[in-house]
Amino acid sequence: MSLAVSGSRHLQALFGSLGRLARNPLATLLTLLVIALALALPAALRLLVSNAQTATGNFVNAIELSVYLKTDVPLAKAQQLAAAAGQRADVAQVRLISAEQGLEDFRTYSGFGAALAALKQNPLPSMLHVRPRPEYTSSAALEALRRYFSAWPEVDLVQVDSQWVMRFNAILEVLRQLLLIAAVLLGVGVLAVVGNTIRLEIAGRRAEIEVTKLVGGSNSFVRRPFLYTGVLYGLGGALLAWGIIAGAIALLGEPVAKLARLYGSRYVLSGPSPPEVGVLLGAGVVLGWLGAWLSATRHLRSIEPRG
Image (cartoon, rainbow, N blue to C red; front, top):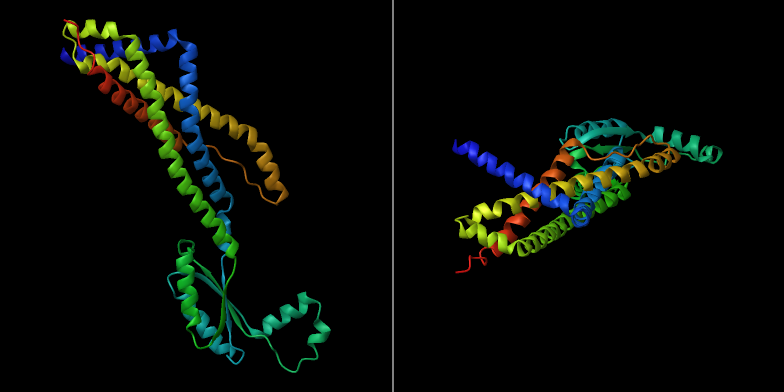
């Protein structure tokens, strides 16, 4: 019986909160819009980072180390070095380009084939193209790999290719940090919006609250409808934020696909995944409830029945 009574009281508080929000549609819509914008901004930044990572996911394969051996290193020794490099846990692939192959490629693609025929000996060294594993493409891991190959006495020069990829990854890391900061600041903003809205509602219902307390209503009983109001604000704002993001994806989808086609890619802009939508809705509910709880707990203490 007690559970049934408690459930009915919660439903009463929920529907009462819905009714009060419905009776003030303009104020409710403006509050929801502010909450939605605060939630949509970090969610949109998260989508920007994830889409950038997806669009450039194959760039990790462009990161290579070019290990130039000394010109007096024989081919057999170069093959042994390539086999040794391939045994490392942080190396995905090693490709050996012999001095003869390098000269032949240079002769074919440089346009100086006739001039190279006058050379008495091959001036090019053998080299190793080393591609690290994706999990070892950070700046620290690549620097450790570069130092490892530089320590070989047979190595003349080690060059890390695709530095621009590392710079791009560094930019993405900065964006991730900005995302965290924006999420915290805008989350505080949602708490402030919900808290101020609940404060104004408590002030407008002060007489009703005094009567409720006079007949024995506890602070938790009086606070319950305000908590549901905060939850509804948070959930409604999160749903509206989801709609804003979906609309932006729909508007930008075709221009982004067209831009990708110009670069020979079939990339398609992706929206939030179901888990990300769940996080967005959950964050809205939690922030709405917490903002309402903080505001109601603080202001209801100061309201007592008049003697």
